[in-house]
Length: 250
Image (cartoon, rainbow, N blue to C red; front, top):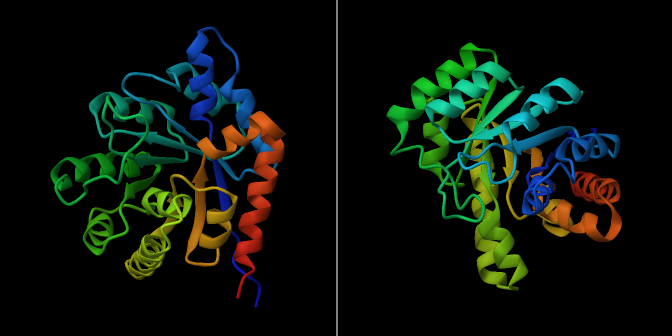
């Protein structure tokens, strides 16, 4: 029986971070999106933050106009971001927590506490033809709440597992991996499409791809970091190859 395919979404936020460190237009995150697609990316992810610390409004407009792969628009659940999403109408919107003081997204969205705010936002996005994803922790309560709220997808936060792997904390790494695998089973049973992201590198992406329940990984910082040494196209190619190797694992 053929192994199920797995998709790679390339997050271009940190190309924009480098651009914004000096101001001006370079390096161009939209050019990075084109290069990633040429190298095998199945989609592009971009997070438009309230403070515009990396991706800007004009980047979203250009991505929608220029790329020929799905755009996954990461956004906080605010009136401003809903208005931008409803105007741009990307393929998918991934709702994420956002704090000004954080360096990057820290942990998953609290969907249980935020049900009253999330329910109408999800409905508006879906009514406009967008798929809705929630970036959450791999625990039963948030996963089942995501399904109850009508989300199409959940993206499980892999950062805790990846940190444990990086620090050679084998006990914690195994515990967190099992949490992710169990979460994937719970989500699939609830009718959700399962994605994963945050902190993944070649090794962790290959290992997590063993779990055929996951259909997409969204990866950015590691690919942009590797691009300094081997180029963005090559880092994307190597990541996709690692994911495919893992997918073939029995």
